[in-house]
Image 1 (cartoon, rainbow, N blue to C red):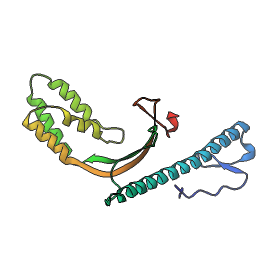
Image 2: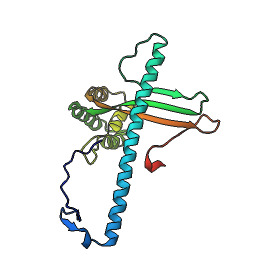
Image 3: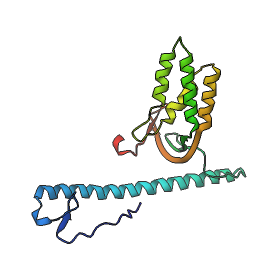
Image 4: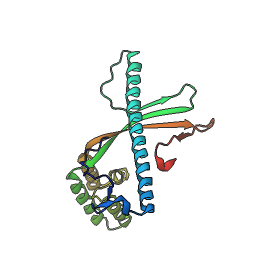
Amino acid sequence: MTDTTVQPHIPEGYLMNAAGHLVPVSTIKDIDMARNDLVLEFVARAEQLQEKMRDFKLSALGDVQAFVELSAEKYDVQIGGRKGNVQLTSFDGKYRLTRSIQDQLSFDERLKAAKALIDNCIHRWAQGSAEEIKALVEHAFQVDKEGNISTARVLGLRRLDIQDDEWQKAMQAIADSIQVTGSQTYIRLHKRVGESDQWQAIPLDMAKL
């Protein structure tokens, strides 16, 4: 991805410090220059690696889609769009490539109605596990630092087997409030662990290497 940010002109023999001031190189300590050079070197290498990983992903997505369409042609089937998960395994069964497409979800204003209905249920239930359910509900509706609600925690409430008309109405309100705001496509590679049925991911995340 190309950085379109306009960079200020820095005269030869100067560096700009964190405060935006031009500083003559001759006045900068050797250790500070060495630190700067080390950071810039690895940033440059990381950006090159990032570009290679981006090319790898685009190439993998294109080739997988082309293979899916080729396979479909063998059976005179037309596959519309690029949606859908695909899992491909090597001939020897030792390696697996997975393309997965996950929808990104959010909730609209109907989630507030669902919360109000749930609160009514909790207040109405004077006995039993009301306190436990209240704690679970409060946890589900907590927001993160950006003010976003976890879709996984909210949708987890729908798995509770509570046969109460108002609760079921709240669960329907949650379902109705779900909005698909986009999708994210992933390429994952795995290798089989020995002769077992277990698979080990081939990590492309630097923290997992």
